[in-house]
Amino acid sequence: MSFPKNIQCRIVDAARSAEIGDKAFGLIILAAFLVFLVHKPILQYYDDWTTPQPWFAASIDVEDHVVGQEAMVSYTRVINRPVFGNWQSNVFAVDAGEGFRYICSGGGYARYYPETSGDIRISLSDFVGAECIQSEGRYRVCSSYALRDESELLRRFGPFCTQFDVAPADEAPGAQ
Image (tube, rainbow, N blue to C red):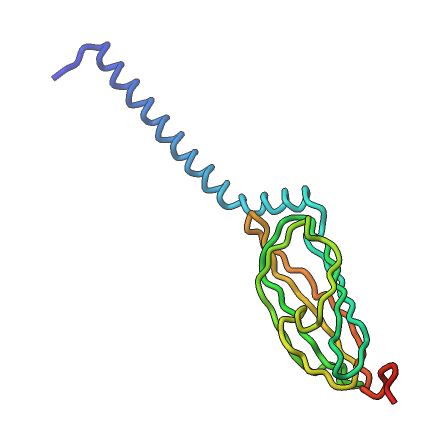
């Protein structure tokens, strides 16, 4: 069976346009795959470029105190973008010439917002999230944070550390 010449041209043109459509579809799939591969790194670069660094910073100061007295922590944090995640605090005894000895630790989950930046004064047990029995000596407390932003990008901050001393109870002001 033979088709008239004008119908044959239409069939060939339709086949050519379908072929171009398949190539375009393949290119679209390839482009989408490449965007998927580089989306997170591009987003991470953009986020780092547009947000003050670091996203989160903290400083810790624990007052020297005497045995039996509640240790107080002055905690300052600077939050440059909304983040959420886990925090971990550890307390170590500083052993002269031997390094550090684990005393206690605690941790939890929190959300941090730029408007909550500033100074906080709380007890050491509330700051760590656990009771830390301290005898006379020098101690070190450190806090670390694993935080994500709203784009689920993860950053680690810290450790933020400080040392403090615990004096014997007989050295308390007014003790005799």
